[in-house]
Amino acid sequence: MSAHIKHAEPTFPALHFLVKHGNTIALLLALSMPIIGMWFWTIGGSPASIVGSIIAGAFGYLIMRSYVDLVRLVADAMLPK
Image 1 (cartoon, helix red, strand yellow):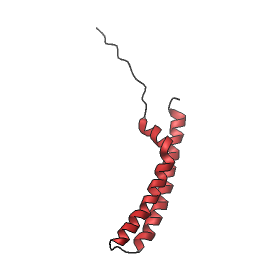
Image 2 (image 1 turned 30 degrees about the horizontal axis):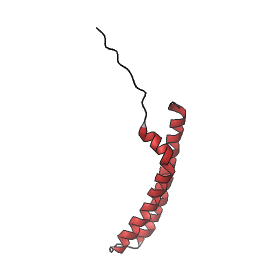
Image 3 (image 1 turned 180 degrees about the horizontal axis):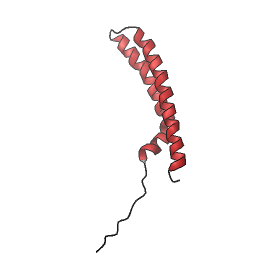
Image 4 (image 1 turned 45 degrees about the horizontal axis):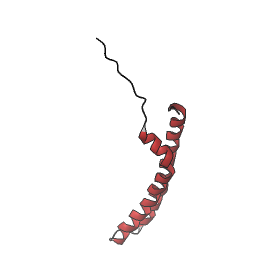
């Protein structure tokens, strides 16, 4: 008695989402940091928080864009079309 099991191809929805919307996500991440820094400054934080958040936003954009590019490379090379 053997059961027949059908194997479905994996779809990897998170990878497809990042391939499609990665640039927008990276930009939103980069813009959210200075907004958070300005909010922190307005509630009584240090003015240096704005400078630090701008630097963090630029670094976050760089890291996120490189991650999106790596995901696109993997998706292009490994995933079925």
